[in-house]
Image (cartoon, rainbow, N blue to C red; front, top):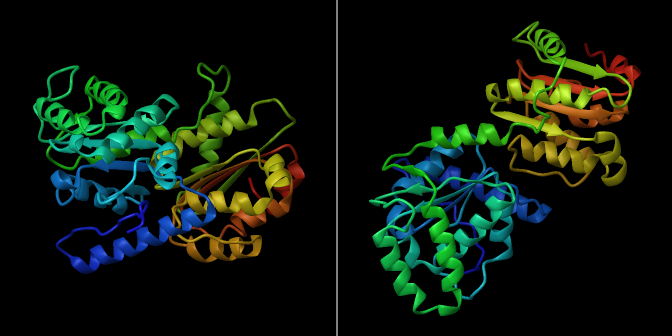
Length: 351
């Protein structure tokens, strides 16, 4: 059995549905590995002995149904000492890490290794949201059951005791969520915060411009609306577009911010930006060339209502490669383009 295998076999009463979900996620994970992309929305860490067929499985499936990309590692039969590279990248690149702390969580060396990595990733900006399941948790110190399980394991691996202990104490000091039921709404709420684009606080004189753009975007709610923001460098086009994005993002299940397209396309090529857009919009397949990217975007996203922000466009071909003729997406989609050149917007006929 491969050490870093991703197990996606959902346990559900409807076995056919479960098999379909498993196939979809396996394909997505394989694609991510092959393209070097291990960007997930959520990383789940849990003791299968306690929660695989209960809380962890329900939470995973609810998030999957909400089109949230989840890394769930079910393989508890590994050999070896070090956490796998694929698993490590999934933790680092996820927007939220969720350890599900249960009675036997600290009896798993692998769970504790994941916990160490998750607490480390949280210091670099990953949201860290522990669940406490089946535990009567004293404040600011590990639960008695957790500590007992940890003590037994620590005797076998004395060299790892200190870092595991620090991670356990850190997670125990957090408020976390205490629940016996799926609470995916909490995760969704945290994800919305994670998807907010970073903007300067206390912006002055931007409100009227934001309201004007929102009115343009809302002019025909059932249509695909595209708004362009153009001016010379340095007047805050990107900031303005980010504020609008943040105000609208919770209305869209699928959204993407493609930053600094002018420089990025020259440095890395437009194909890499297509790949980012495809990943952001939760498509499990990936393309290997620009033409494949156009074909994939044009054929797979007609049923997706999207919010897309294309930042600093300077060539009509960049727009065509990323959003085509605007009929790639479902009605009600919103697209914002910032550029230094009005002629780019005139060429594609945006507002």
